[in-house]
Length: 126
Image: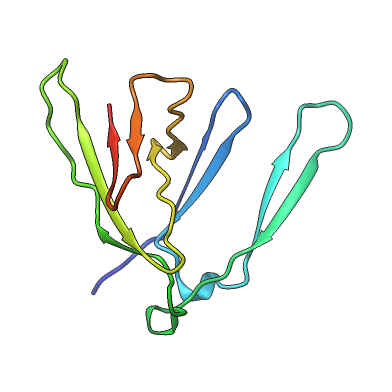
């Protein structure tokens, strides 16, 4: 017997950016309302909702993004540069977003990171 559990994880930065990860997404999650609530104790909390759309793999629309080459975990000597690749296809061509611990990698505020999007795959270096 195989038992799978749905895992929810969240991550919030001090700048207010927060992410929710649902893994694995199931067809039964379709049309679920996902809510983000912000409350700082002043006035009433504010809420923003989104409806989750889930597509079965056999009903993906033409051009739907697909990751062809997944990032691979690496062991890198301290002081060296790590390069992580991800190749995606779709029409129009998808943009690759890099996350570290569920949060977007901000290459503007952390000069240790750089992203190359010339060609495909996209490469994250740090």
